[in-house]
Image 1 (cartoon, rainbow, N blue to C red):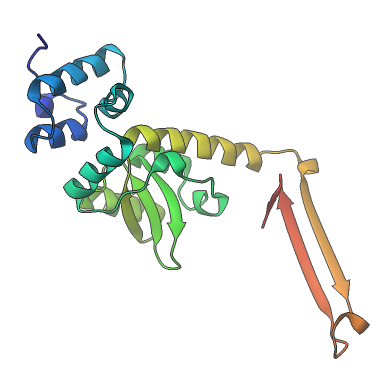
Image 2 (cartoon, rainbow, N blue to C red):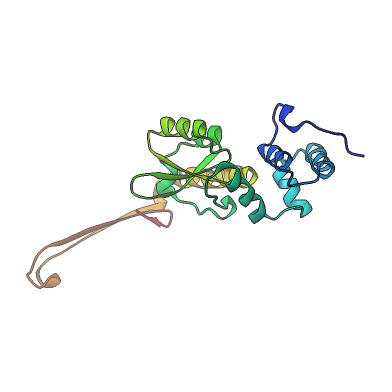
Length: 193
């Protein structure tokens, strides 16, 4: 029989465990068994619940949306966006468990594992930008941060020979009125900027 656990009293508890317990979304015995399994496997409760098929990713995201009153984003499907990653330094992303996913022209849309007002305000202060929060599963978010920033740093440190700059200048018949056309295209390891 699994040992009874007080999820809230654990020093590094997973907020999802609290949500499941307080809202009675999972039988207490099964929750205790999944928490024990996660501890044995040195894994998060989220990852354990997903592996065991206890809940789907969509169900867990819905629970987090309802708890935080915040839309969710599936961080396992976040695309690498160099134009956004430079707005949040890696050390800030790792400390705040946050990754930028979009920019609406005024606000940086950021996926967070724990989008409380305190966390959002702290992130906004750290990056000096207004943040529009989205909740994400911590397990997916940490993986997305690692993969995206590793790739971002790899591309930023790519050898000079991989970066290209092309320019062109056209006049005369290039435009109906004979005006000058000038353009420039930068390429960083296949990404145009």
